[in-house]
Image 1 (cartoon, one colour):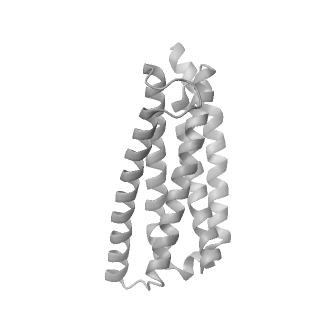
Image 2 (image 1 turned 180 degrees about the vertical axis):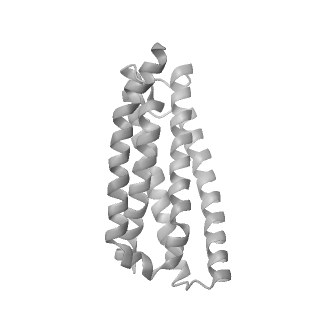
Length: 183
């Protein structure tokens, strides 16, 4: 019962913050709906992009927390061979997933007759967005995991809900920003 209370105590605040981030994400999307409608392929694959970056971040948090608890990485902000391997493994996974997602998105777009504007530029924007988010999330989650672990908190309870809602906000934010910049 004590462990249950600890999970509730550690998770309730972050769940409320995550809900607020969801409101900000929805507001961002509704304010920029015209931009998104100009490039329908983005609307088609946006949910998958959110899921992709959120899933990768969740895997990363789980791996970092496990490494911290079993001692394969020290609770210090420093690079290690284990951290490099995790970074490269997740980077390759996210790139392969992104290639598959883009091919699938364009395939569905062609089949359904969705207008495809500047496919190479859109692919570039999607790729830059995901790589930027992956890099930022990796650094943020590594530092946050160390910080929480040193304070005796379980990083999973705080970071998993936070990072999924943060990814749901940042993915469309960067996509819209890069569309405005490049198109």
